[in-house]
Length: 161
Image: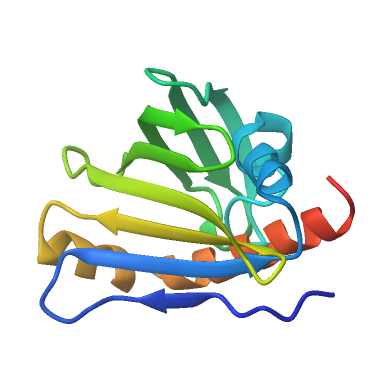
């Protein structure tokens, strides 16, 4: 099993959140795992939650929407949606991200894929509309969900996607 750490940085005084993780996979394999709905459903979100992907069209102008439920959410549901702005296979994805529980607070996410020492590094930067919005997301337990997601994504890739 992969032992590459997920590094989450929330620079003090900024509305940024940066996530970096290396995977034992090619950029094409990683890109496929993060853009194909059936594969995304196998890794996105905390381990104890189920996911329903209502829409996931990873192309410029395409939209996505998914809902987490079960596990620690109990009877509650957590839905997210956004729009893909730039999609360059195996290189770059730029999209918006909105948690429907906090409407009208849209983050911009930039996902870069690069080859480093024979592995693929995924670098994600989220730009929140304000420092307060970022702090609220962090306080909600977002970092645990990110860690689970990145570990689950590594496991999926190790199974040979």
